[in-house]
Amino acid sequence: MQNDTAPGALPFAQLTPDAVLDALDSVGLRGDGRLLQLNSYENRVVQVHLEDGRIIVAKFYRPQRWSDAQILEEHAFALELAAAEVPVVAPLVLERTDTSGPLLLGDPPTLARQGEMRWAASPRCGGRAPELDDDEVLTWVGRFIGRLHAVARQRSFEHRPRWDGVAPARAAFDWLLASEMIPPDALPAWQRTAEQAMAAIARHFDAVPGLRQQRLHGDVHVGNLLWTPDAGPHFVDLDDACTGPAVQDLWMLLPGERSVSGRALACLLEGYTTFCDFDERELSLIEPLRTVRLIHYSGWLARRWSDPAFPAAFPWFGSSAYWAEQTTRLRQQLEAMEDQPTG
Image 1 (cartoon, helix red, strand yellow):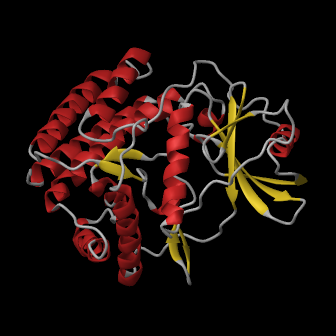
Image 2: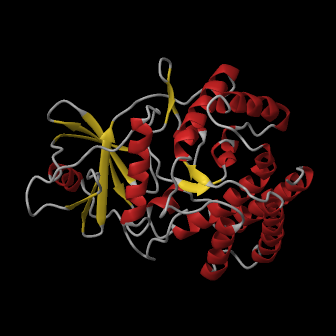
């Protein structure tokens, strides 16, 4: 769901602690020197203590990934959800402290840009991962996503990417073939199996005519949900917001074991349908969407391989063994899609 980073680029090489503090100071957020880099491969995310006692989270966007318009749509969506009292963490309004500072974008301004670097900030909001083996928690999470979707359906994205059908998998597949990153001994089997998988994905989507497309969070899994006992679930950002079918924001919360996924899905939908109707035909898209994500993930790793953080974090990627495993997983997904009725 992202554009390419230029080959050989070191997108965050100049983002030193002093550069982070200077960037925030230029938009009215003066840090006291205490910084903590948070886990994020795609962007650089830093927790910052301010002199006024607040603690914020600053996000520096990967250059060339999103356009300004795409980021501002993400921010506007978060502000819209927050105004509707849906528990998401919205971006802070920025103010330029001098005329030589960065350009501020948005109404209200929530994005700063100087050269290729763009950044935003939000309040720190803590929490832990939700216990998704608890039926009550799953139902609460379902209500939360239903509330989010009820607001999401009121408008449409103009600039954010689409996550529907086979297109995201096809884009990753084409890029991987062109990149020549797949070892020659592993390429034929993976390519053949991926082509079969994409044909099956397309058949399943074609079998759901009139599929509703709407604004989505886009990447709802347990690592992107935070939970507090009193307030329940919330999201800290919408970095992968996109347009697609509602089930995209539900399926990644299901356990891998099919013997228990039915009960988990029932709990999610019980909560979801309290606030939002659900087209049950979309259930036939769960395994196709899982397959799309599998192919897309390999493409994402390959696109980012020029960033030194990626070889260090994913040393197993790119080997013949990795691609053999991916081929096996795609074959398993082909079987899963065959077992799942279309439409």
